[in-house]
Every structure is written in C-alpha cells, then in structure tokens.
Length: 518
Ligand code: ADP
Ligand code: ZN
Image (cartoon, rainbow, N blue to C red; front, side, top):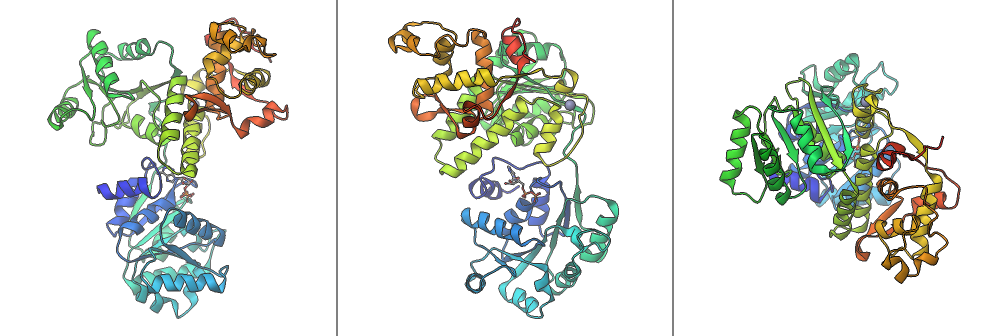
C-alpha cells in the first residue's frame, strides 16, 4: 500500500487503519483492475471506492440505487473536504447546476448517479467529457433479475463499461453464488473480475480479555503456559517492551523487544530472527507487524488495551495464519481507558472527530466488557452476523451480570455533588466513607453521599467506575486532570428512567463476597 494512500485514510477519513479486507480491495481498485467485493453490510464498502477515487486521475462515477444513501455519502465526503456531487431526481435545479459547474471546472473527484440516468442518451457523452476513469457500482446485486432488488437500469452498466473502456469496481453484501455469477455475466461480460469474498471470522483464534490485576504476572503466566511457542506481546510504550522483554528472558524464554525507537538495522535483525527462529517471543509496540509474514505465530498477547477494534483485530489476526489453533489475551484496566480518552481529548482533531474517536473507543471497551460471546460482538462490529462461537472466553465462562442501577446512581451523584472536579479514587473514598485527609479538607465527609456505598469494596467500586467509563456514562476531563464528568448518556439513569446491567464477575473478583443481586 503506497504511503500516501494510508495517510489519506487517516487525514481524510479519520480512520486509524483498514478494516478487514479493505486493504486488498483498495489495492486492486487502485491498480485499475475489475473487481467484485462481497462484504457484509457495515463492513466498510464505500471506503473501498472512495479512497481509490481520491488517488486516481479523473472522476469516479458511483452508481447507487438509493438517493438517501448517495446524499449521505456526498455530505460526508464534502465534510471531509472531498469534492463530490450527486445527480439524482432528488436534486434541486441549483444543486444540479453546482454539480455541473464543479465537473466543468474539473474539481469533482466523485460523481454519484442514480441508475435511471444511464437511460439518457446524454449521459455517455457527458461521462466521456468529464473524464470518467472508474465506475463504482454499489449494491451490485441490483443487476440480478432474480433478486428482490432488481433495477433494470443496472443492466446498462455493462454497456457503459465497454463504451468508456474503464474498470468497474462492484460491491454487494449478497454472497450467494447465483447472484455473484449473474453480476459477473452482466457487469463483466462473463470475464471474472478480481473477487474478494471473505468473512471476517478467524475461528482458529481463541479470544480472551482480562482485567489487569498483576499485569506482569498475567503476561508471564500466559507465556509460561505456552513455552517454546512463537508469540507476540504488544505494549503501549517503548519502555515497557524493554522491561517486559527482560522479565520474560529472566523466566528463560527466548525473547526480543522491538519498537520504533530502535535503529532500522536492529529492527530488521529482530524481524529476521522472528521469521527464522522457532519459539521466539517478541515484545513490541504496534510498530511491529506490518511486514511480518510468519504463518505459525501461536499466540498474541496485549499487555495494554489496543487503540481500536480494527487495531485489535489486525494485531490478533497475526496469530494462526496457518489455520492451526492460536490463542490471544488482551489485558485492560482503568488506566488504559483514562490514557486513551486523554489522548483523544488532548489531540488536535476537530470536536466531531474527537466524538467519533470516543465512540470508537467505546466500541472497543464494549468488546472488552462484552456480556456474551465475544466473537459475536467482534464480528457484529464489522457487520457480520453470527451465532455464539462456543469457544471464546465468554462462551466458555459466561459472565455474571447484575442490576447496577443503584450503584451507578450513587456514583453519579457523588460526581455531581463534588462539582465534577474529582477522579475515581477520591469519589470511591467518599462512597465507601473513607475520611481521608483530602476528603475532610474538602468537607466531603459532610456530603449526603458520604458512606452510601459501603456495600462495595474499593476494588469493586473500581470495577463499577471502569465499566461506566467503558460505557461512556462518565468521561475523564482532560482539562481537569482526569476529573470525571457525567455524559448525557448517564442522565436517564440518574433520573431513574433507565436501569443498567454491569458485569458482576469483575466486581466479584474485586470483592469475592459481594452478593450478586438477582
Ligand atoms: P457498507 O457500505 O459496507 O455497509 P460503510 O461503507 O457505510 O459500510 O461503512 C460502515 C461504517 O464503517 C461507516 O460508519 C464507516 O465510517 C465505518 N468504516 C469504514 N471503514 C472504516 C475503517 N477503515 N476504520 C473505521 N471505520 C470504518
Ligand atoms: Zn464465543
């Protein structure tokens, strides 16, 4: 993937990386090959033609059957600073005028068009004139006469492709074989295009998350149970890769560390060693991975929470490429959540991008603290529906849940009564009635919330706070040194209009005798 393409992914679309399958499709479309990509709904098809459209000469024409969808995409692209327009029956004359002006001035990169427009004799000369260099077909199954969504005008796309002599990139979520065959016949004259059909599931990879307890021992224990196997430990910082590598080496594991602060030659040496040696553990930052092509990596552990669900999937996906069983473990704790939230808040992105980054982090935390099959949550995030896998940590050991409405309301009330000025540690002191010097100095031992949460231990309250941070009911405020603020989403719970269920296993682990309410 050329570096400028990856940087557009970030700068224009604001995505940290590709979703599963996207990179291969983007590459094929960029190279000007005819392509057919079958991806589940929500899998991220639009990026696969939008990104190449920005990188290629000329205009990409997008045929799409839904006016609302086209308008949404055009709006999104414009907001991201991309020149895009749509010609649909829903346009005002003024909008159509603007599109043609932009086309005449050679500004437009993407032109969305309803299929009906292909029936007009004026369309082909127009597309020639504006320099159409790629046709993207959204919902390509609409070309199938046997399907529910048949759109007769889709049958004209094949002619258009021949007349313009440009590649076609076709996308659909419908994976059945007949539909695919019909798309190939009607859009590509029966010449099979580069076809991408891949579910996201990697069933041989075992998924597990654990709350950081004694994180170093947790990683050492995981590695000890897999002695002699090749594995990767991902850490959030360079310093940590070195200390953790030393700890693993002290336990007798063949271990190397790897991060972006090392010289190119040292890094290369570790890559080669990992490739050639059996049973080496590499402790690395995310700098390690792009070039690795080792089929028999047996395990991947995250010593810290990854950046996003996409990053998580990509990083664990390095394990078990040979299809044999592989195992993963991801550790996370309240500090990870605080760090990631602060990184987002203190970044330079515009406010709505920050909102989106928080939402993405929420998705990852939702995966970390999933209440049922983890694989289902992961695949669901990528738009793929599935049943419980039966083999992930949560299928093997179902999470116990409890009604945490009461506890959460107490926590929220402690936050509000102290002016949203304090972090979890101080709030927990208030809730558990721990009259520390700071509590007394602030007069918080006189608050009505003082001591109302004695039924939970400090660590149990820690688990509650971590989960409500994960659900984005409270958020550390970067400008107030991580003081917790309540978000809008928490209001219904505070007002008694909504209840909330949390996982009690992590609470129980923090406080074994805590009786779960049923
Ligand atoms: P589809 O057309 O396949 O149903 P979309 O193209 O609308 O899916 O994408 C679904 C969602 O996934 C959108 O919200 C989009 O912003 C998001 N998305 C797409 N690609 C990525 C990526 N590489 N990283 C993060 N989010 C992505
Ligand atoms: Zn499962």
